[in-house]
Length: 218
Image (cartoon, rainbow, N blue to C red; front, side):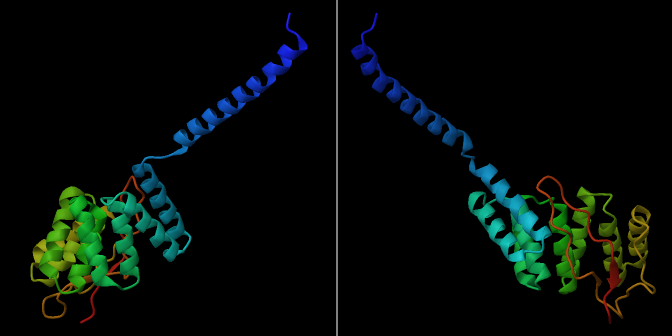
């Protein structure tokens, strides 16, 4: 049987045990809540996409840049910064971002598509055609890729091949409108598209390219 003195002396040890258990719980909780850099980068990318969707481009850019400090090879963050630059008419910056994204993934269809638009609009028709061909090779059902390639080919004198690609694009997406007349070398060096690039992609999938196209004015 314990005396009153024995019971009193046991209380401080019991309190110490509770404090120690609490401290250990905090350590375990902190360890569980810490995320690896890849997951932190993913969180920043998701936050950037959400900010972009809400129309807050500045906040989105901050998140994309934080993403890249955690994962310098994240093609989606690089691409999204390129889309922001293209929307803001910083076209050289956008080109650079798309090229950096393609260094991470040469078959990244959204980057191929947007870079092709920029290059053709800047007079780099041969490179633009090559980019569209690459896009179609990795994404054969890309309607806008076929359609834009067809316009580019027609504009450089390859009318028959251009018509085939245009027809392939329309077959995949009947909403595409064929310009009449088709662009030809004497009237236009290259086709163009709507000013906005493709939508920013989710981390798991690339977006469907824009479908609205029109010939470049002579």
